[in-house]
Length: 206
Ligand code: ADP
Ligand code: AMP
Image (tube, rainbow, N blue to C red; front, side, top):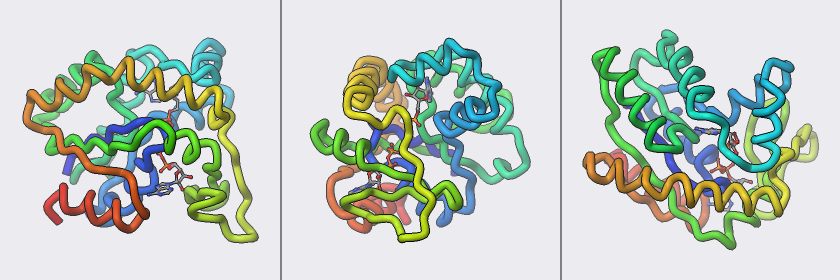
């Protein structure tokens, strides 16, 4: 199963990706997580750190290089879920070329759809448990008392608004691109986590 998960920031991709990856025994590959890890170890170029902090997109070459190295690792032999990549058509074209060189191709592109007002609330109140990587929400999915909570630097209202705008501008052409290839399946991301999970699994035919 080679799957691309598309959706605006805060739509619930990370939350649902955990279920999908468990079901198909595939790794979740998030370019956002990889960039944050590089930043934490001090190996991310300062201009990319600034771009991320402002809610913009880092250059295509930077994320394509990350994906190129990650998708040839052994745990990707039976597939993978790409979360937050590609975000632009040039990234999608690079991915297609990369896979075709490896003799494989994408199976499905899942688009998780949530309207703007909900996205801000979901992202601003998002917290991650540093120890487990689990995603929580202060209102909808409160963390356990012993969680060591992290609040992402770009999960503040002004930056989230900018990230949503960036998503809309840059990905407006990405969805039609995948629709034209017959790969796109849209899923309504509004509702309880379990309800959305059921829709996601239905869209994947499981
Ligand atoms: P993304 O990976 O798309 O940015 P996340 O999966 O991290 O989104 O979810 C963003 C926030 O919304 C998190 O705090 C998460 O707990 C919460 N969340 C996810 N799905 C739902 C849902 N169906 N209803 C309410 N809150 C949700
Ligand atoms: P995310 O965790 O997916 O919300 O990504 C966090 C930030 O990392 C984004 O706001 C971008 O600055 C950067 N980023 C992650 N993935 C990509 C990508 N595919 N293309 C460009 N920038 C990205």
